[in-house]
Amino acid sequence: MLIDTHAHIFLEQFESDLEEVLMRANGAGVSHILLPAIDVASVHRALELADRFPQLHAMAGIHPSSVKEATDEDFDAIAELARDERIIAIGETGLDYYWDRSFDVKQHDFLRRHIRLAAELDKPLVFHDRESTWDLITILREEKDASATPEAIRGVFHCFGGGDDVTQAVLDLGFHMGIGGTYTFKNSGVAQATASVPMERIILETDSPYLTPTPHRGTRNEPAYVRLVAEKMAAVREMPLEEVAAITTSNAKALFRLS
Image 1 (cartoon, rainbow, N blue to C red):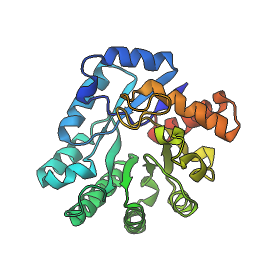
Image 2 (tube, one colour; image 1 turned 90 degrees about the vertical axis):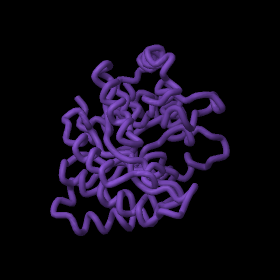
Image 3 (cartoon, rainbow, N blue to C red; image 1 turned 45 degrees about the horizontal axis):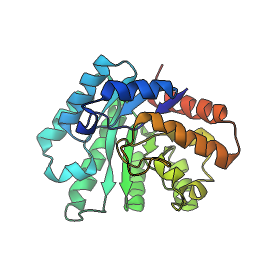
């Protein structure tokens, strides 16, 4: 049994063959697929899919790259949607400094709003982090320190790239690390950089349709390929595949409160 904790299968890339995608995921042993939002419309789409397919689970949040155009009304809509019992997490939120640094202040503000919403609702956070790691960690530390319920501020650093200093900081904050397709890339160094992450803090993901694992790089990613990440991890860590699957599935179920 495997869980894909991060897949954008509500996007148009899956409109023509979603049921086939889900059948392949089932055949690969994937029991749950989690859908991180990117904006208000995507939350509604994810909820629609989750109502149709019980293995799918929706989140609510505004992706940092969508924050530039987002309004206060958009965040209010996210906050209202997040109260729906079908929403299992707040995200994806975070920081992205790769494309555009012109709205860093707004990104920081929206990140803090998401963290406070997660603490209020006691739902885990799903963080996007691109070239912004230490600012994200600093803001998270500040919010936990200021919160009346710091234990409620928990979650995952999606697409975790590793490094001992970052790993220790994330562990100290009580967060998990999401490992996906980049773990399988020959020259990425992610497998080596995440070697110090304990298995009890790892969950698996695909980030479909992006970051397709080896040997399918260059094609659309899909949830069935989370098995390739698990197989690579089993080889790197010299563990049985069944053990990798069992531990990461247990971690995901506990973090996202999946039955």
